[in-house]
Image (cartoon, rainbow, N blue to C red):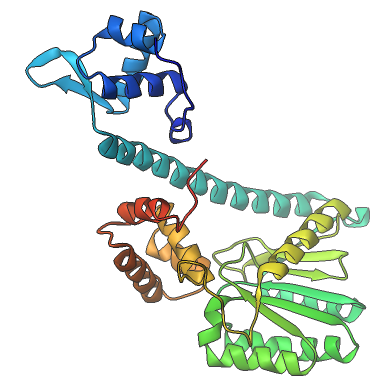
Length: 338
């Protein structure tokens, strides 16, 4: 009787009994149900249930010339099948998370509308770019110690940078500590770099990261302004003042700041020669994201995202995005999924 060993395929959607039967079939291709049970230490019922599971996953097929007997597909094909299914699940999960985020933002906005003006709510809705800028101007005058910003979306528009200069000058002139995190993609955009250099000359600090979760401003760790839409950050925002929420958002900023690189410093590469932007693009590629989605997360053009993806596939010797993800895990460019 075979001793059951460590199961490593459960993270790919295969339960421990099915994995045991699959491994036993690879070692004993001619074994029937009874023999499989004896060898693996399983009952015939457990073996038959496992075969049903393996059949549904296309990991066993009818044997050539003997339709009544099943054979296990080779491990290289089997692993591609399991990883493809897992990748599809992860992509679906990502879509659900994005949908949940949008729904949560909408719920916050609707809740803000329902709260009476006299109740001093911890959530305030702002609709449209003009209202956002007007409210930000008022809040900026009240800031005394710290002004922290997530600025996703890649290179900033000339209009946004021009509109922010008076506010930034006022803050820095009053000795407020300003820290801003942009995307790595701004490093190749001269106007945005010049704006960041201008901030630095006035005393502001600027760093970059490959991707950011949302546009956010934290003021004195007491008020947060967050965009309600990642697709159109000018469409609306919410102001949050709840202590628990602010604590979590400040922790998120500090963690991101620690991993960010100063704008004037060359972006480092990892052991595989990948920049943070390339590593992030590879992870998104392996998760099944489109060029459009990758471009949005990195703050680059659709053409640039496609070029980055093509370069990564060439370096990995992959002919498809799925194969690039598999090779990246095999070559330890990406961690294996738990």
